[in-house]
Length: 282
Image (spheres, rainbow, N blue to C red):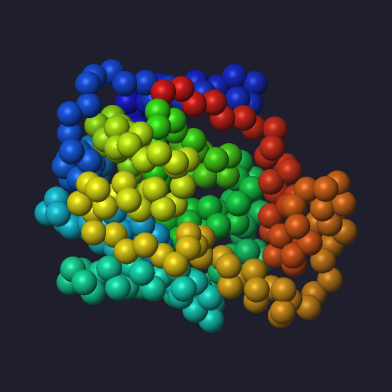
């Protein structure tokens, strides 16, 4: 994202994604070119951090087509609680004879012992996003790449929690690409023209159609998963320890939900970082 102009003022982070040239590339070609660009500017090996979503599938397809050597990594949580999320990446990989490296990840231990330190260090109130950071830290060599999203309808919105990955890149001293689909200007803008052709608000179904329109053979999920749906169910049913009063304060103030997982790991953290603002210009 070296092409993006950034500056900070009073806990407000400004990102300028304005075009500097006319967009001419087909989106898949731009994604393949972005893989080549990364191989010229970042150290190998290149590890793609993959969930089961369509963005991960599209990124994997671009690297597969680019012929740039790469590795893959998909984390499997305790009790296979994110198996519903990984199902589509397994099917996608099998359809195209691509090998995926699945590795066990002790999510419970991370949440209970390390999550808060990651959250504080990278200004991130999302346990999901901080989990991705921890998984990335397990890759000791080369460059870790996460998919991110592309510009749509002349807008780029990186939610406050997802912006934690930008802080992670800046503060971790790791070779990390937090948003593959924003890494080059050509790729970031490549999908934009088509998104205007869809006469509804941009949503998951429109994203699927957009990828398919540009020849990414992605497999839509039944609905857009984040991988933590069954993790939250597990905490509702199985977590028996007392929840500290300080964790309940945010909900008392009307922020968040009463679900055990949110009381433990989300509500108070999102409130803590709500003071940080992110402004995007296209």
